[in-house]
Length: 317
Image (cartoon, rainbow, N blue to C red; front, side, top):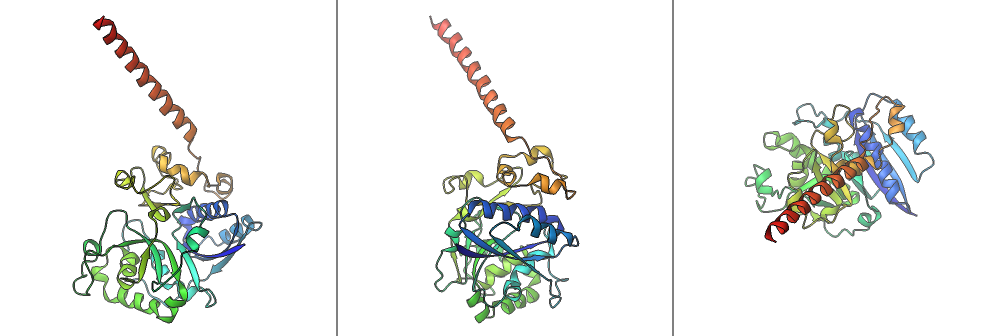
């Protein structure tokens, strides 16, 4: 059985997403054993025991990591729905034991739909990480405002940091944790996308691209770049990534948004009974009803066209 190392980070708000992510990992990678290094920064510490009990009989071992107070993030930029937890991926090497040479970082708002061992087998060369290019068609020149000052090619590809396959051995040997934090502390005026900008700058020409299927980004309720990416993406993707502030598990999400077609992937793995017993009940949308409604609508239109063509045919005669 292949052992795969995963790093997750979550606060209380993202725990339903993290729980669903783990279920999706286990469901689609049956021949893998997962070491989950989980940095939980929330106040609901009872979630640790609940997660341990839930996953006890599965091919998984969760290592709960304690937050270190050695880094002051109070002056780091945080935009919109993001939280300070996004910066902790810069310190993965500081939280994971030294004997772990390789790890996959996954955002807690992602769902895995394919055997992740296919990603795990990617071979490193001179690169430190594997990642997926940002689907918005972003380049370094569009995002990193000080790219000229620091000598970066404006046409270089900018990657999304939601999924990273990391060579931790090289990361440690070349002291990238310090390089990342130093850049963050000295360039706050130029940072627009939190740690993702920092990772793109420091790993410039030190990352390799993997298939975009491994990090397909959607924004509920509409995905502005879906048409653009249809020629490159064969549905379903390997991993779906719910960007933006509207997450499928949020209680205050409009039902119409929750039952968007891209939410189906999340609710295929969401355990509503578990969260109901833990005061976070969400009724999963009835996607089958939606399919029936679409079918009825199609039949209605089809019959109208038939009637119209019948009238035309009759008049021609």
